[in-house]
Length: 145
Image (tube, rainbow, N blue to C red):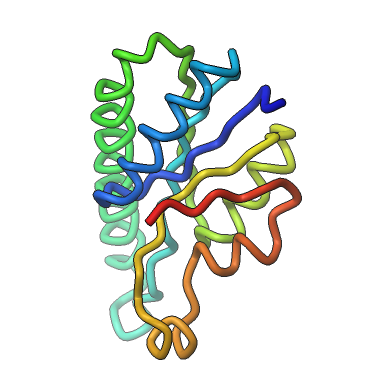
């Protein structure tokens, strides 16, 4: 049924839980498992001198990518017991948008992600990545709580 499963990873406990669920499914179905992390874009530094902005911005982006790769590596290590082939990916951008792009470009059959559980009012006011992805992804989405 599912041949390619994408799991969105953000380092939270719920995303790890989602990855474990994805590994179990992939193992039972003989599917590929892909772990994907999105580094959110940084705010602009308009109030700083232009010559310093580039260096500071790049250092921050580099650090967030380093942390993202570590999150992916730790999650991959936790899934090793399932004996599933795992690939990883990381990109910079708005999480919901980049996750949906990844689903499309890699032709995923299923997307699994954690829910942050913001609650109804806060979730309504702020929205959430899982909420946006559920509305826009072109494959089934499993949200783990």
